[in-house]
Length: 218
Image 1 (cartoon, helix red, strand yellow):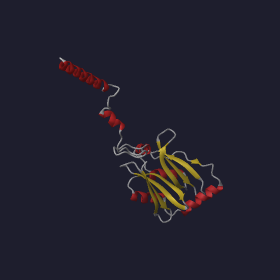
Image 2 (cartoon, rainbow, N blue to C red; image 1 turned 90 degrees about the horizontal axis):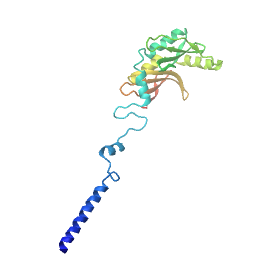
Image 3 (cartoon, rainbow, N blue to C red; image 1 turned 135 degrees about the horizontal axis):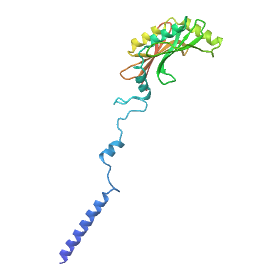
Image 4 (cartoon, rainbow, N blue to C red; image 1 turned 90 degrees about the vertical axis):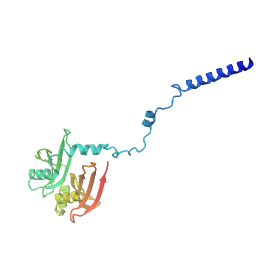
C-alpha cells in the first residue's frame, strides 16, 4: 500500500509539472515566430542614401528617372533656342529641373557680349523658348567678369558636353561655365540610365581636357 501511495504521489507531481510547463509556453513566454525574427533582422541592408541591391532608388535618383525621360528635347536644342531668343548671346548654363508648376523645364542662362545675362526657360516637349528675363541684379563688375570668361572659353559648351558623354554614355542634364579652384571649366552632368547616377565632369575651357570626374550615387 505504501508503494502504491508513492507511485500515486509521483504521478501527481509529474502531471502538475507538465501543466506548469504548458502554462509557461502561453502568451507571457511565447517565443518569437520565424516571421517576427526575420522582420527584426536586416542583414545586408543598404546604407542610407544609396540604391539597394533590390533596385530601390534614392530620392535624387528617382527624380532623375522622372525628369530625364520627360525631356523630349535635349540640352543642345534647348540652349540653341535660348541663344536665338537673345540675339548675339552665348550660352552660360543650362539645367533640367522642375519649374514653378512642378513640370520639367530647361532653365538656361545666356549672356550678351557685354556680359549682360538673361534667363530663358525652354519647353522640354516643343523646344520653344519662353520670354527672356534680364538679370537686373548685375552690376558693371559682374558683367565685365562674365564677358571676360566667355571670351576666354575656347572650348564651347557643346564641345565640353561631347567630351563628357564620350567618357560616360548618358544624358546631359546640366552644363555650366564655372570657376573651379581658380580654373575656368565647363561643369557638365551626365546621367546614366542604367542606375540613374550622375557623373560630373570639369572640362577645361582652353584645352578641353577633363580635370575632374565625380560620380554621385545618391
